[in-house]
Image (tube, rainbow, N blue to C red):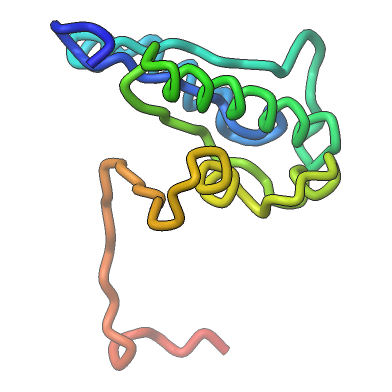
Length: 136
């Protein structure tokens, strides 16, 4: 572990035109989370607004931030990486040969067995197909 008292996690916002920056802001403001982990923000979005749609600039920013987070993890400066969502269309517009974070991480680490994990509070509502009202 990079620090004995709590894990240190690189946090990337993902696509700057998506919901990732809002999620990152909430995570950084969460005092309960701060007691459990130390978050290191890795952001390459730069100044200025990003439109709420896929762009090459947004894809490039998310790629650069994720590459930096990978470097930090491989050097042992952080214990793990947490990423905001990326828009695969933005990555393609930026010229990335990778469809998303997981494929890029597999390539950079040389670990073909690497997998993505999602963690979030989950709230679901179940509906019976038989009890669903006719929506016509």
